[in-house]
Image (tube, rainbow, N blue to C red; front, side, top):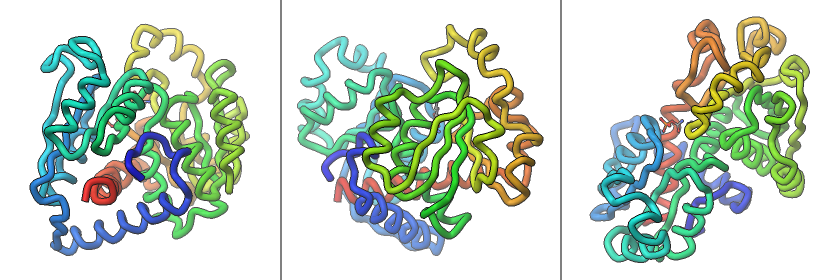
Length: 303
Ligand code: CP
Ligand code: NVA
């Protein structure tokens, strides 16, 4: 494993190893221990979009492992692929740093960085996928339910980057995912086909939230308006009416269901404040697990 670009390119065994390592490092760090396997190593972090969780958790993970991180905004370097080609950036950065992580609009930017870099490249979210989030999510599910195999996840909302990576993670790890999206906002057919092809689990697409959440162990949602879609906000709020994860919908799944959201959450739109603050919500455990998963990922790729 040289890079971490998309979950569908990893084997189930690699994913399970990463989850085990995440749990081990989590225990170590919670107990006051340290593993400085990346002493002296440097990660370059390129961001075309805003971030709270990803930026801080990667920086902390690098520091925890004895290394350091450099945060790069597009304006600092004249834009990604604008002042110079992405392939040149990849080769220049590879001469300075030991790893590159990037959050970009186009998925192809991260793919091109990986193609030309001689150091590991990590996808920190693109318009197409968010694999680090999905892995922190499955770690969270495993902690709360004690298993992954056979777990039913109902994703209610936009068939976006977060939904796609979750679909691949569920398919690889033997979970059952049902995605409920309005017509025209479903996961694309190619993603469903890929998920079905790699499946130890199953991925189903429906258009009714109620149908998706029935007997679900997990209800998951994400924003209706992803970064870069701001101009569609008005339209999307209309289209997604009826897809809010509120107390009524959660009740249909039963009292022990866990509610997940990658955050940031837009309360009153895709999720109600009541649900975010309820005992069913594990959203902050998910956020925390970004750090624990990424420590394991950085250790695997860079040490
Ligand atoms: N969930 C997530 O990736 O959050 P940020 O956009 O704040 O990094
Ligand atoms: N789908 C959201 C996820 C944010 C972490 C977005 O791309 O903006």
